[in-house]
Length: 355
Image (cartoon, rainbow, N blue to C red; front, side, top):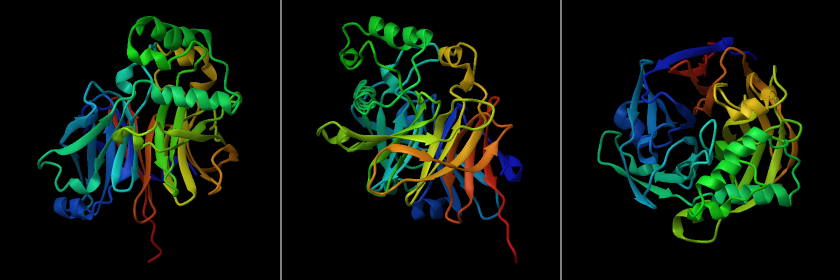
């Protein structure tokens, strides 16, 4: 199915880099603002406590945009580049990319996880809610790299330019910093752009980079992410899924966002970077530059935590290269957020009735 069956809404979001999409489930918040449906979205150029906004639709079809007012608590410090949203046990989790700039190096400020209680948000313009911050340095980078090595996942070979920019340069600039202990010379940088919880409570992290040796996107399954906030043991990687989900016009695809419905995982995959200028990843991997943004569905076996899996194509976006978020509403319609040419769009399927 192509994207020509979608309705489009232009949104005024500043800064304009929107990522992630997650339906609002707090009925009190919906009622207070008079919305029939709403979605959380993150803005990746803001600090964690300033990066969350809500997009709500009124019964007359008009849409509102409002920023969440939050106060950072916990491991307070500089954060940027929120990329994904996920819900578990009443908490909304915000996941940083764990990556860096387009030409490196890795940036510890992007290596964070944050969360807030959805039920604490009564009004978006009311008193600030607490945004818990966990800034574990490059811990997730270390956990994912170790797991990929232990599982002997066949990854795309790290290009020389990407290695120099993200590994060598980070080791040099981070000399003497505590976070550099979790960075090794033979590592591969990770770029997280999707997250969703499975029914059992494990967190799937969708990687935009790296990809498998065959160019397939990767989902890393993590147990115990909540321990980042309570001082417990580090989370554990349970396994890695290699998903056969590469769209047209490319031989590589990375994850842009994830959404779970039962055991079904919906994912959007696309290019490895949206802006070729100064992108060392696209310099080394031109086959991942023009891959069409595509919505896929996979069903994960409940008792398994990794392996190769086929995906079913749901929808293509041949004219939209930057689909950055995906979420269903309560009526089963799919909504997408795209970030095209300095403006943000909300795309959603038309409601078709046989009445």
